[in-house]
Length: 398
Image (cartoon, one colour):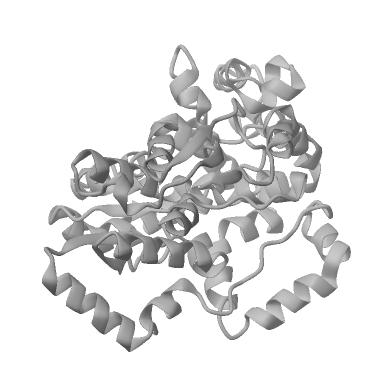
């Protein structure tokens, strides 16, 4: 169940061990510092926030949510290190450096190399994600007018089916090709696409334990999305950890806001959307070309915990793929965890437990599918294979 326990085999790094540590700290067994002392920090350090315990623990202990609350209290007593603050505020950095400044920023990262990574507390073996010269938002606004006119004519000839694409930070400013693929896929399937227009869902601040910042971003996001959600328009996300925050953490961050439930009801992953529409008869397997295709699917941790792999598998099968799902658990990247120098070795051990060997064993004709940004980074770093997002795979197979 717990990725870190699987590789350490240490009771302290299990869900039960962490829960017992928190309970002992509240009972005073960790001295005067209690919850905010070094003892509890050491126990919580290897918790990846993967949420496996939320659904797989017999007691349904949600350690990811407990860690979020605990980290918030910890940072009230301790200064947050610069590295952790950078990761938490990556949405600000990405918005600032993507676009015209991207070539300069990317060149600086490449020239800085190992020295820059060491200075930032990042494992030198890691590949730093670069910033996009043309963010998804810019591409979306500047698309060829002829194509827009053609799309408008097609929509006028058929009933308009509206979709909001929840363009997260990663697939907007760092991997816009995924966002473009999703837009093109949805439009080719007959949907009118608009972007969500939110600043950031707060996922990275949730992982970092910045409770009040996360609450502020959640409130902004709900306010931006509410009217469209209330109108019954699906809000389709590409990064599982981002879109699923709307259905999980937002209820805890904004417990008295009735709009949260309305937004959560319309929030879904691309996999869920495609599957739901297929079941409703609005998407058919006839949309995809025939042929024998194979896919090796790795599900994002939050996706597996809150949704399961079934929608991803069904969506790929609609497109004619024979799907293999290795029992890989967490890939070991877990957002910033795998980048951190002190956690690199553990991260690699988690990947090498099942996922990396399974990818290496797959033949060249097999498409590697992973919807999580950090999952794709881990696969590339450990196997040199490029994993594709479901949106890219489905678009290519049309």
